[in-house]
Structures are given as C-alpha cells and as structure tokens.
Length: 254
Image (tube, rainbow, N blue to C red):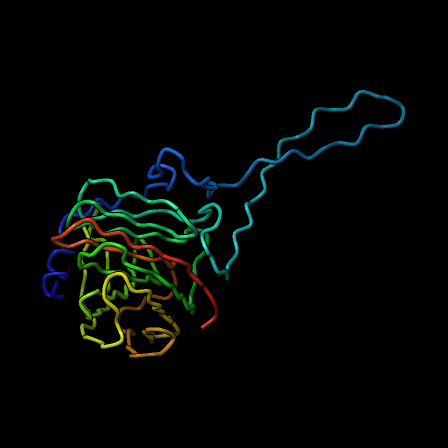
C-alpha cells in the first residue's frame, strides 16, 4: 500500500489504551511479569533464646528491568506493554518458538509493543523480523515515545517502501501522524523473508538502518523530543491477517 494511504489511515480514531500483555495472551500464555514492584519478605533471625519473633515485615522492592539488553523472547515478556490502535478488534500477542508474534486479523490495525520499564535519550534499537503472512504489511521501530509529547516511528513495508512519522496524541483516543520522510529501498525484502532494521536516536538526528547499514540520516530538531520509551510496531492495511514475528530486539548505546 502506498504511503499516502498509510498516512491517511493512521489519522483514524485510535483506541489509545495501554493493554497489559496478559490481556492478549492465548489459552496457554507465556508468563508475563508485572511492571509494578514485587513483594518480598524480609526474614527476621530467630534468637538462640527462643524468644518469640515478630512477624516478618512485607517490603516492596523494584523489579530490576535492564536498560540495555537483547530480548530473544525465550521466556516472559517482562517490561513490555501493548498499545493498540485503529479499531477495537483485539490483536493476538504471544511468544512462540522464541519469537514475539504480533498478529492482526482485522484490516487497518496498528499494534505497538513498548518497553515500558525505561526511558531513553540517545539510544539504538535493532530488530530481526519476518512477515509470516503473505499480505502487505508494515513493520517498525519507535523511539522517544511519550504519551504527552509524541514519538518517532520508522516503518518499513513489504512493498519496498519506508517512512518516518512523528506521532502525537491530540486528545484521549485521537492521534495525528505527520510524515517526515517517505522513500523506497531495494534492500527491503518481501513477505516471508528475514530482515533486520535499526533506528538510532542521537541528539537531533535519526539514523535509519536496514541489515546493519545506515540508509539515511534525518534532522528532527524541530520536533523537540528529548527522551521516551522504545518499541516495535506492526500494522495491517486493507488486507489481513498480518503476522509480524520478531526473532529478537536489541537495545544498545548509539
């Protein structure tokens, strides 16, 4: 699908609600860790005299989520949350065979998996993915996501095109997407082929990568986004289903 249509459709009413991954899991889900602090007991030693000991105190300690990591989706999806947009048809989100699967069975649906545990200023995010369905689809990366200030989104499509968007919530459930760059690249693979993409957010520059090679650098100083969360994205257009399978996601220094 051409990016003029992509941009137009992305101005539809969005759901804009964060859903915990547990709400999207199948009947036998991969365990998902909470983003909230975990409860731990602080044991009190028993004196040698046998004097009665007070009941241990319930203390809360933060769950240690890493800042830099490579997630190969072999275990839980700790720290990740799902943002759904486009319509109210619930996507199927799960881990399977060491892949994060973002499946959309309805047209014009956008799904974001955000790493909610950390905020970043200058950062790099890389991912390896396969579009497992034969329909046209968009796969992307996000950086500096903020509910109040907006985010940058780098999308590649199986038709050989790519774009960079600035997304911003206008009101509860309503978002606007402003195109920054739209172009094509012969390095992009069709559906069914494994592909790597990367996004470097450093200062006022976005660097776009395909298979570890920088294909373009973009000045985004006018948007004044200083920090935010990172994530991955997938979208269906007029055709469905779309099944985006992420083999791994790597977050590293730029």
